[in-house]
Structure formats: C-alpha cells, structure tokens
Length: 68
Image 1 (cartoon, one colour):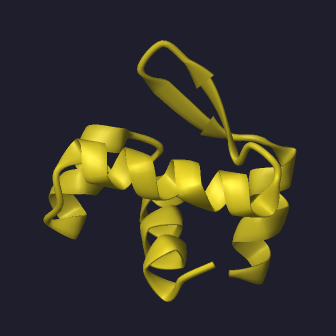
Image 2 (tube, helix red, strand yellow):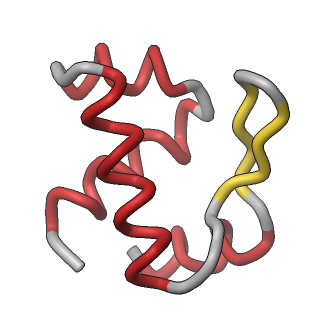
C-alpha cells in the first residue's frame, strides 16, 4: 500500500465521482482508476459499490476511510 493510493482514495471517497476526483488530483481518469483497483487488490476487498458510472463508498470503504 502506497501513500499515493491513500491520497487518491481519500479524494475519490469525498467526491464519489471518478472524473471529478481525477481533475482535482491532476491525473488522468484511467490512472486514478488503476490506482484504486490496485489498492482494492492489496486490501482484498472492494471499497466502493459501483453502479454504472456512480460510485458509493461501501461499508468496508467507510471503515477504511476513517483509518486513512
């Protein structure tokens, strides 16, 4: 787990929108998406519920956010 992954996660969790979070972080959307995917793989759990283009923190994501 890298500090960059945690920063990206925190921003995405706050905004719950991949495109907006990428713009705030000044990265391309695919880079943000890949970083979050690697973080979820490292943790062995999904952090967001995905419905089309919408993201919502799930229970594990909310718990993890408090620790971040």
